[in-house]
Length: 315
Image (spheres, one colour):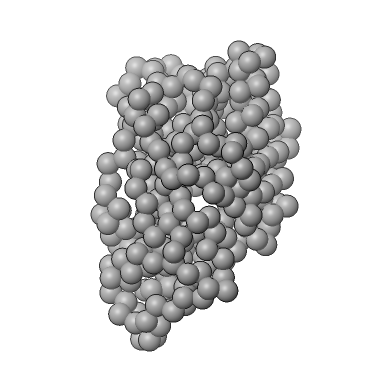
C-alpha cells in the first residue's frame, strides 16, 4: 500500500487490455480507489471530443496512457500509416487536453521500437536519438517517440509533470494469440502447440534466428509503471526491462521444449528478422524508482503456455 494514491483519481487508457488489466490490478493493490478506464466503444481517444469527454467523466489527477495500436512485424508492415496516425494523434490529444484539464501527472508508456536500428547493446536512454528505428516498425516507434518530445516540451513551457517509460517486449498470460497480429512469443506458442496437437513434423519460423530480444513479464511491467507513477518526476525517459537478451533461435528452441513439440524447426531467411539486437540498460529504473523485474523468463513462459492451453478454444 502507498499513501501516494490516497484521494487521487486515476485514468488508465488501455486499462482493459493485456498490460492495462495488470496495471489496474496493481494500482488497486497500491491503494488507488478511484480508477477510470475509458473504453474505446464509448470514447474515441483519437478525437478531441473523445479525449475531452473521457477527462471530464474520469476527472483524473493522474493519467497513465497505455492505449496503443500495436502488432508484430507483419502487422506493422501492412499498416504503417494507421499505426503512425492512431498512436501519434491519440497521445498528442491526450497530453494537450490533460494539460488543459489540470491533470497533475501524466505517464506515457512508449515502446522499445523507438530506439535506433543499430543501437549499441544494452540500449541506454541516451542513445534514443542516435539513428533511425528498424524500418518494419519505424512509423509506430516514431509516433510513440513524439510523445516524449511533447512531454519534455510541455514540462519546459508549462511545468506539466509528464514522464515517459520505455518497456521492452512484453509477454504473459492474456497476451494476443491472433496469428495475424500477435508478437513473437504468443505466435510461437500457438504455432508449436497446434503443430504438436496435429502431429505436424515441422513448423516454419520467420528469419534466420540470429536476432536477439529481451522480454519483460507483464506483471513486472505493471509493477514498474505504478512505481514510476508514484516515485518518478523526471524529464528523462526510463527503460523498463530485465537487462538480458535471448536470440530468436534460442527462444524458439525453448518454446518448443516447454510446449512439448518435437518436430523440425524450419527457418525462412526470406522473412525479416527485425531489429538485429534488443536488450536494455535498466540502471536508471533501479536508481530513480527502485524497480527490478522479478520473474524468471522460463517461469514466465511456463505460466503463459499454461494459460493458453487452459483457455484456447478447440478447433
